[in-house]
Image 1: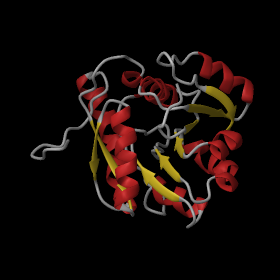
Image 2: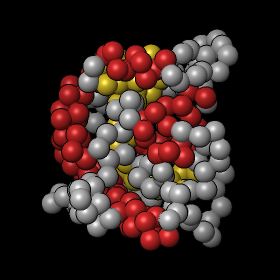
Image 3: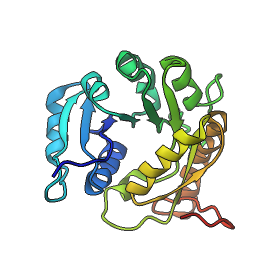
Image 4: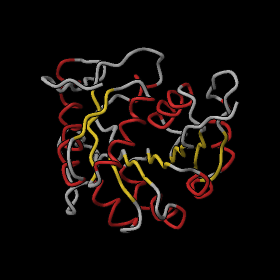
Length: 222
């Protein structure tokens, strides 16, 4: 069976967040390409991801090849790797939607919000990729280890982007991953969710919580 759903490249798909999202998106029937700096690691990670019967199995590729072959590019890399990875994929994402999940965590004080001079990791991504790339940010406040389980997650996902239609596309990706996406305004607002990740890390420590998340109350979404 050939899926009509968008092909998604998961850049950094060998990491915990990337693997968790890849598993859920594959289960929802999206054709997936796992990207890594080395194709061998990407292929090893892709083999570990099951796909529904009749759906295309995930495959592995270099970050550049994965980004070039996909319609939507999901960047799931640590802050320290973001600049290099974005430079690697930049020639291959012109005109595409890039969903950036980067949070600017700076060890050892990861429970303290430390946003970059540009204002947020999302704005760094947009500046680095250029105006021809449509950047949306999401998935900042969900625990990676929970995404790897086949269980419901009690967490909303704030989605930021300057184009409401691009945010809506990202919200559909969020829904495919089994979560509720919320329109949270322009890309500059991503600073709030990025900083909130550090707050949640502190909450997890203080209350010994297993991956605290957020819920937005008082609204109804389909």
